[in-house]
Length: 342
Image 1 (cartoon, rainbow, N blue to C red):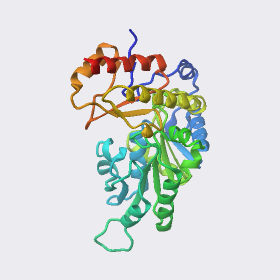
Image 2 (cartoon, rainbow, N blue to C red):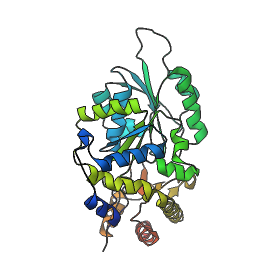
Image 3 (tube, helix red, strand yellow):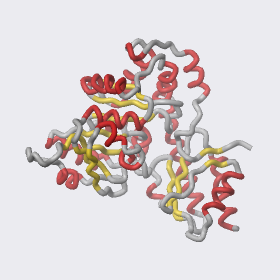
Image 4 (cartoon, one colour):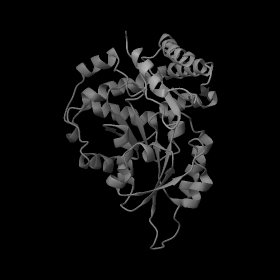
């Protein structure tokens, strides 16, 4: 029995083409700037993301924290949503690495209101205040919703008025572009810097990209070394990243369609609450009946060869990716149906 893994789109195996590209990659010492495959990936990514330069980093968490560290001075304040990934799932790195204070705003399903951002920007030179060093936004949001472009622009306009840079946590920015029917650069234009993951829905085994102005990326390159992220013959990792950006992006609509199919099948089961309007990308969030024994459900899924994360705060998430098709989804839904029936 094959194992289906819907815990996340980080669990994907590299494609056969990626494995071959890794084998064939021309490499050099990237700390010296000698790896041609890394340089090719960075140039390609910068062009796609609409930025002057880009830097290959080990992970999305690393890329976000490197951005904060490079943008900010110690003691600065960073404005961001209280439900964003940097706050919830990056192990408090902002305090340890950049030494900054996070000033959070309640978001509306991931959307930050520009007027609320504006109210929190420190204006003036009061010696009691930290400096507003950065605003962080997220698209697609980690709740699976895509932030509209007009909301991105509104925050960007406020930031421009006050001379505060904007960093975009764009871990799944390519998914966001698919949902919006736009180019990725139509989203990233509303940020000074952007981090995007190659190792989520794009199936590369390792790595993310941090992109922005050339001078910023030069500073970030040195900071990457300081933080232990200087890589040597990294072309073997960059090669599948190139395929992630040139091939795997094109098939993201299929993941979105499969997520929609999964959401509709789950919504048809008695007691499962799925907000279909929230299924924007490849994530399906849903609420289980209070009477359902989640332990029994997880045991049934495991027995059927299905890896899933259990409910958290009453919500459960399943994620589609290139290794999950319609037949697989039917197999997953059948387990939910059998447990509910029991």
